[in-house]
Structure formats: C-alpha cells, structure tokens
Length: 167
Image (cartoon, rainbow, N blue to C red; front, side, top):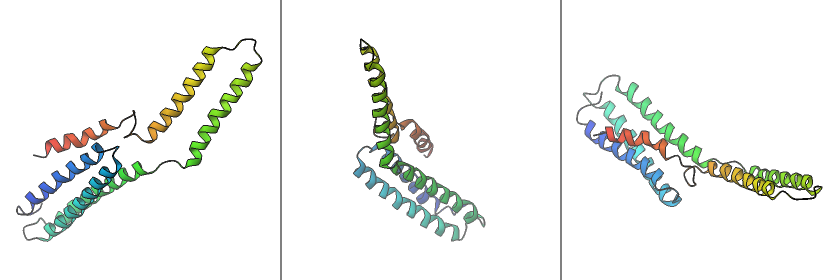
C-alpha cells in the first residue's frame, strides 16, 4: 500500500519497536531500566506514526493506504497503552489492610475455637498458618506478575514469534 521507497525504513522501525517492547518486559524487575526502554518504545511509536502518515501522502501510495494503515497503527498504540496501564494499576492500600484484618480475624476465631479444648492441635495451627500465609502471598504475587514467582513471560511469546517472522 505504501510506496516502495518508504517500506524499508518502516520495516526497520517496526523491528526495532518489537525488540524494544520485548526489552521492556525483559528488563523487569529493574523498573528504571524498563521505564527507559518504554520511553524508547514510545519514541519509536511516534516515529512510525510520523513516517506512516508521510508515506500515505507520497506519490505512489495506494489511495486507501491511510484508511487501512493508520487505524491499524492506532490500534497498535492503544494496545501498548492498555498493557502499560494494566501494569501500573494496583488496588488501593485499603484492600491490603482489609486482607490483613481478614487474616487476623480468622486467626482470632480459630484461636478462640481451639482455646476451649484440652489439647492444642499443632497440625491444625501450623496448617492454618501456612494456608493463610500462602493465600496472602499468592494474592500479592499475582498483583505484580512480572516481579514475583508467578510470571507472565509466556504471554510475551507472541511478540517473540512475531519478531521471528519479521525478516
């Protein structure tokens, strides 16, 4: 759809852009390095947009190039923004406080229920403690999926496969 003279530069920019997006995720949990790479990605987005708009106006461009190419580029930018915002949005601190109060309340009720017995069941005490600890850990680890034990690296495989096809 674009003139042959504009295509090689845009292809290089797209390859660099996909490499940059992958680098953003690979650099986590180093937040500063990831932010710097994200800024580079945003610069590449602007460059791709600018060159694509200019290329659709060049002689030799298909008459519908702007109608087809620019909405696709806009979707690409929107998806990037959506993924970035999803990584930045976290529950308010009151949710974490409520989780703590819930754990404390459950411990209080369990302790009160076991207080009347002649013997303490250490298996139940240990089991309750471990289950509460693991539950809270998993909840918090899922909230930061690129920094803990629960990782979303498999979701980046689509970008890796796309980059492999961009030769």
